[in-house]
Length: 475
Image 1 (cartoon, rainbow, N blue to C red):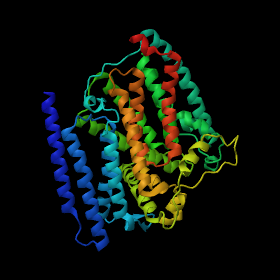
Image 2 (cartoon, rainbow, N blue to C red):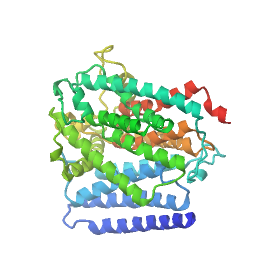
Image 3 (cartoon, rainbow, N blue to C red):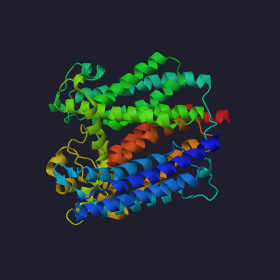
């Protein structure tokens, strides 16, 4: 039965690939100028090539629906092929009033070459005897769980850690001008002092906020008090919501589902994936609405929240390809490549301003965005995807090398659940790192992304350390 379902799923994917390609070709407007017409054809060919590589891979290899390769490819196809095509059809090619399509052909070629680099690096077997790609599609996982004594101990430790890190998060949010009532009621009451929103020297404390997610997974796995789990989830949810963290909320929502499917050896069907996608889309719109209220320092009036906000927030997040186009347009002819500026910024980011008040970040993409789009886009913090940051550093070479490194990172986290006998720490780590891929792709800013990953990993490393090799006790 499983083999029949796999064959049916592969046939469905092939059918979808062909039909969507034909439909996009049929959609091409007849009134395009020469450049937009050429851009449309190049973008369509990028869908055919990248989508074809993905479809062929899914047909001939055993690929798990919840492994990074699938997630990365779908995001890339949507952001760099489908959304630009749709924007050309709807004549929505302006970013802050500026047409960014001048560099679309060059940017699309770089994207395709970068994806091919990712594909090769992801499936290349560095160790000849490696079997990772042969076992990645298995559902049932035999893993080392914790003993009841270990669960009780970890449960108590994680409750203490959660309270401590939540306190750090509250201190940071309060220092940013947000009242306690505003946090606990997720904007229904209380106030925000926007004049203090960027002045706090305690930004490093806010990074502990990320660690609440894996700690909560440990608590939900080791504890039996469901009511407490829901309360802690709500409080964690509230801190991310009032901080306007769209994609960290996505991690918080997706991680429990991934963890559940890994433990139970099940995989979501199309209906469940669609339902979860709707929830995520809703949350993206919700956070976008909250951020609009936070910017003007007012309480959130939920009566004005509607589908329009959801649509605008969703489109806005996938329109970040325009930031990538702007960078390709101006670098290096107008603005020099930024080189290793993101690495330097990552090093100094964690140093508290209370210790180093005069610290300054090197510009990596801001000047490129300013010239490629507008000053207002820079002031608004208009983001670029990871390809934008890679290109800003070293051009095409930066994109290829960056995607190779990204691919090996994806393989590393994939091994957390595909190795012979993973432990519960591996499953929790994979559950939080897998959805973080969305943030790593759509927000190309190494300093923030590095510390996001670091603080998602720290709780598991700490717990493994204090257990002193508990996995060996199960050997």
